[in-house]
Image (cartoon, rainbow, N blue to C red):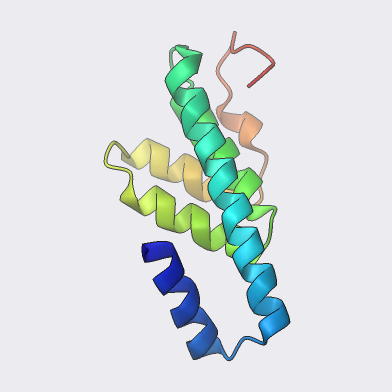
Length: 112
């Protein structure tokens, strides 16, 4: 519900046309999927110090979708309770389009 309300609000405030509204919504949904995949990988990776990399990668992937993906990444990142300052730094790094491999720990399997 929060996602839908935010999209409607953005479209009203910014005067988004119907075509760009659809694009924003599509990017947001894809960004949610990217973030979900990153959080799933955090849960199953069971690798020490992998959280920051996977947070950065999820935000990076979502941001590559476009403005809707960036918005979704910010929304999801702001609602996760376990975020620490170092995780926030990794999330900002990924959203800015910088390479998330900066936070990749040694020994993390290539599938992540």
